[in-house]
Length: 402
Ligand SMILES: Cc1ncc(COP(=O)(O)O)c(C=O)c1O
Figure 1 (cartoon, helix red, strand yellow):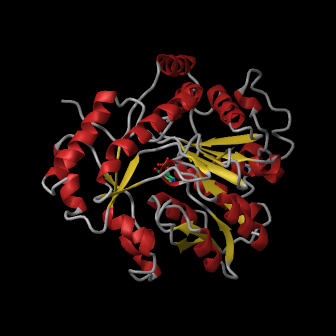
Figure 2 (cartoon, rainbow, N blue to C red; figure 1 turned 90 degrees about the horizontal axis):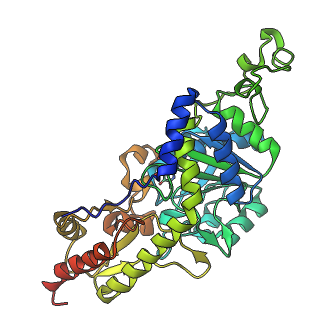
Figure 3 (cartoon, protein in one colour; figure 1 turned 180 degrees about the horizontal axis):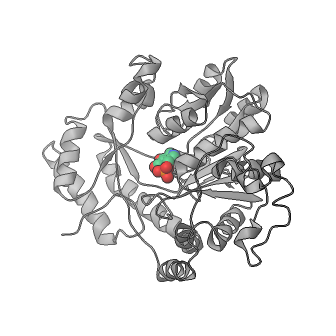
């Protein structure tokens, strides 16, 4: 019997051929495919700029770090939801800021705008709301807070490609939007990420940061296109003469390559179709598992949001006569893959213990950490797979009299 996986590898023939073409051309670091991918991703979002990078963590890191180059204080605190994938907190630190954790709303599992307002202090310089598991954050009050306190906003849309808040695509509402194309995400490049930006200065800093802080600022490097000759290369390099080896700022090494971009180009073409299929599966499972509401709290789309589900999150209800571990064991034994639905980074992840937070400070995030899990909802699940999922839950609940 086949496994019901959490993610899927779904690369079409066209993507495979483009990878082969790139290999045959012999230029496999960032080149024409990366430029085409950036253009296509920016156009999909109706944003002027997209800077492709090597991972979603780099997208967050570089986006956050860019603000020190764009007139914001060089140090300070960045508001971040406590319930999150670890990389978002790591990125804040890699960018040279301090994470200021904020509890989440118990229904949406996204950053609670009221808790965010309370967490703002004299050191706060920005925020990174995460559209967790594909459900958009309540952006209006967050953007209002940012305006009031002059904070930069990086939307983390790693898990929410194509999701919308009040009709607007996630990643287009803050100052920048950061995406991951990790293999388990809605669309993938294998490994990869991107930052959407609204103006040329932002894009220039992002391009420089992804390439070690390089002084060159052209959107397309002339050395990488047909003529291979750059007339300004030796005019702007200062004492060292060559601007390609002159560095304006401390940067990162985070470029996307042309093989990854080839995969991504094919994925963008199918993004809407993939999102629709995932939404269909999500609502099918909500319908099928709704009968078990005594035992499970299900994840909802929300009023203002249009969900693009990364996965199918579930919370074992507080009164349930079984533990999450028992349910997970049953599902895994039945070949349905599960993952824990993250948890409270400051109080449940050993790596962040050093900040000195105490259990109980982030009750909603911690509850998800204890009782939350997720299973797959991807486009390659068949109707039979979905029926099997519902039947497997039903079988587990039978012993509790359902
Ligand atoms: C919310 C969120 N942000 C950022 C990332 C980082 O992405 P990557 O794995 O591409 O570094 C992830 C990873 O899965 C994530 O879930």
